[in-house]
Image (spheres, rainbow, N blue to C red):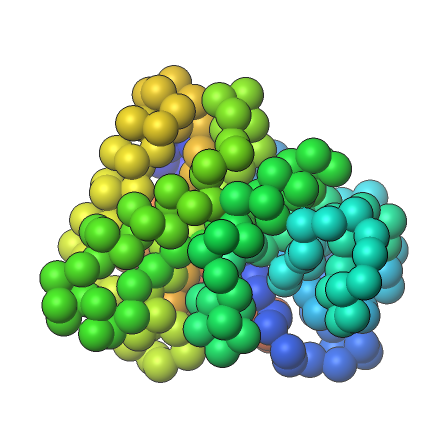
Length: 256
Ligand code: 13P
């Protein structure tokens, strides 16, 4: 392993894919390959209906299991939503917040993000806070502005002492599910912008505890190259996390 400042984190986001049987098979296979998991963190973000079963299978292994979204209230008239405590109750230890599909397809508002982050942290769910620009925003040279705005809304209620539990994922919207990956330079530049912003918000020491993952068409054949970028602390993988044949080589990016 390289001399990294932060433990690499490889996360799979299944989105609305797989069924119960395939989910459990995949978790068993990955669990079997992880060993004690000491040198890297691996997690799956699972459709909430499968969380209880997936966490039961993952139990006793270092594999993390999380929800793909969460609401910020503890209970109430919020049809179709899940409270942070509910995710915890079915075995989740982490959660995605602000994924681009939530922001763009389901019109989630920036104003909700701070509350979601706070509510997740308050019940000990480890959040991955997702940010990323659209193609139009990139073409209009607005990438930095968009990232900062998303970070400002997500981190409004974050405290310095929360930093070690938080991960940020840079997922350019134009690279998600398109087969088009950001170049290593593009990823590096965005990650540096994010780290600089975090340092300004929380101070260097706390900011240095936060991992920044890259997501967007990560595949076995580009994982090594992306992980070689010093500012990339891990990967958030969609399509390629659905099968052991493609996800295991990404987890083991440095082993071949
Ligand atoms: P793909 O890897 O399928 O592009 O998805 C990325 C993503 O959105 C992960 O959260």
